[in-house]
Length: 113
Image (cartoon, rainbow, N blue to C red; front, side):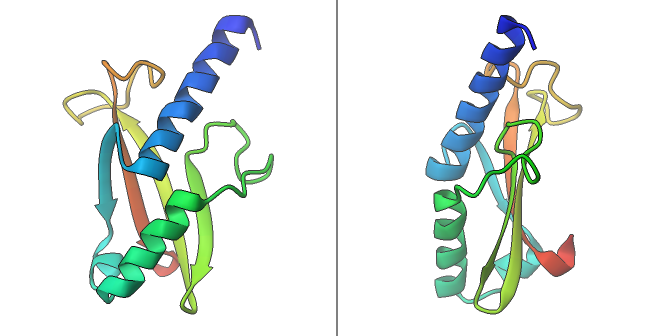
């Protein structure tokens, strides 16, 4: 990986972490299953997701911090970040550039995957 690629990867990771931790820099979506949970469970799941830090080579092979899973209230949750163009029609051609990218973070139940 050359320096330019490494810089882009760092930027992508930072932008993904900002969305996951602070809900800034993109859209946060809840699946139907998560949306139907009691408010306390939804709030706890969003907090778990925001505090997620268990990234490893196995679950984050590209180092982008764009996916995670956790257990809460006897349920398996997944979250993922996708990067789209500004019109949300196609994938972003440059996920490191927030001017060209809309990030969408989705929190869903394991059974909805």
